[in-house]
Image (tube, rainbow, N blue to C red; front, side):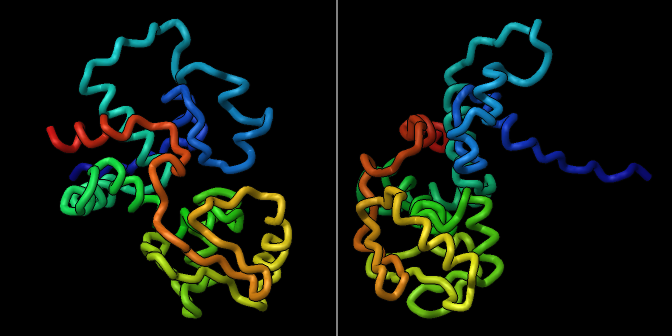
Length: 209
């Protein structure tokens, strides 16, 4: 009887090096000289092997993978987001990015309470995050306009990060309320406000083919 194959999770820095672009998978570390892409700005693997020229399919696949890695979602989840975006009114690519930005773990990261999206997911799973006063421990939870994101008042880590977030640039679609230490989703983000270096139209083409 053959043994089941073990799935191999590629290290975060290798994903950035493979795509030759910072995906900010380690948060603020990616902005420093410790970033692996700053030290080794070449794809992982033997250096003597020349990179192959990407086909049209390869370009679409690369952009899709970049977007998936950036937000830290599985392939099945990505497909479900695309299907939902396709059913929505408006431009499919913009609707897709809006859905990804609306994820609770992404919002926690955007407002500076999570050091990275992975760290933000842990905060959500550890029941430190509240939406409209109720604990939500599902990182993929989609916030809506008017939702208020806050943190447990007894959470010392969240309190220290909230106080240290004064110098951070919070997206314009999110409003910070210092009086009760919360963040309100004033509206959904526009494409120009979503800072992710990806050709979203190629992602749509990948799933549409």
